[in-house]
Length: 150
Image (tube, rainbow, N blue to C red):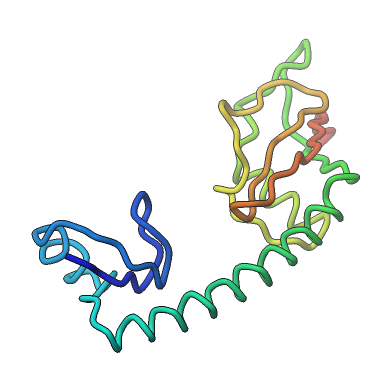
């Protein structure tokens, strides 16, 4: 069955795409969640308009992401953390901590999910954290963890 997607569906397609799916997948998943509708001749024209507007929005968000990346790459985000003897941290620095520090120090609001941490940061010093705020824009953010003096 040909279906027009109303929004992006992971592993299937983007908003406005015409995709072929099984009848049951459409009836049981896409239709109840409002993610798609049957493709008809008139609906395909509407889908073309959706694709064009989606492409324009995507280009605008990419341009904004490029600006944010250009301003964040040269900066160092400093996070103060409590340490024990020898410089090891009590706890760790997480993506949420980095997100809060970036917002506080630069004014850019970046969701914690955009920071790609394999594990939490548990050592003092500088760390490079890959950040993806758009599907086509990835950049490193330099995070420096220092001992909290208070």
